Length: 248
Image 1 (tube, helix red, strand yellow):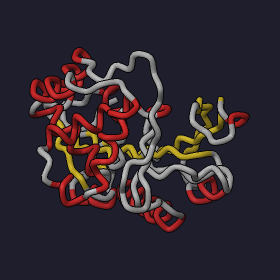
Image 2: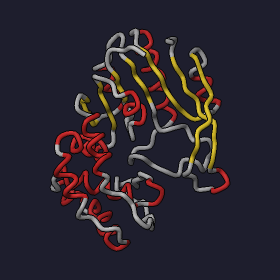
Image 3: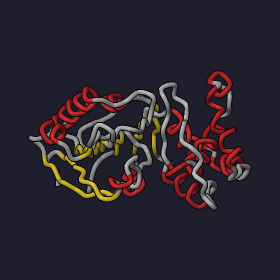
Image 4: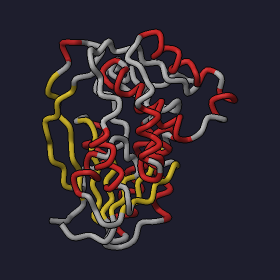
């Protein structure tokens, strides 16, 4: 569909961005390590590949690399390329590819025990490097998108989802949890962008709170597969919602 530029304020893994491959994009995320990784892939992919090749698929080595952010002052001195290399390595070698930090912002996912994890996927890194060529990458909170969005733009929000049960919220993407007040703030931004003449889409879990919040908009119920859950019986297909303002 036609739009001027694409804006994604919770870019995460960027699945929609990489599917659409828009000519102009603004990709935002509050996760500093994630945005740094994208910037390094965009600007220094060859050096990143060289760094990734040095890593080892060994338990002791993994925990040594993981522990580096325990000394925050020391970690801050690391070159951006090495930080990005660490992020990709841990994502590929940790349990279930989960990104989770504790209240101090320290990565705390255990070793995944994979036989042959592909932590240096050169072909994929080059593809991502090319896709990011015209993307503006910003490390900030989702509200900042209001400074960039204009009439005719397409904005996709993929926020941390409302937990579907009390125990479901066992992961933390950043050290600051995304609560009910944040969901309401996001809804108000959705309304502002709708009034501004943008194409707006948001995804979330299927629950009464979200359904009531967005009741005046078009809501589509989708089934999504979830591989990560602390309760094995709850892994599999779950209902999610995709909400859009009026556009074809």
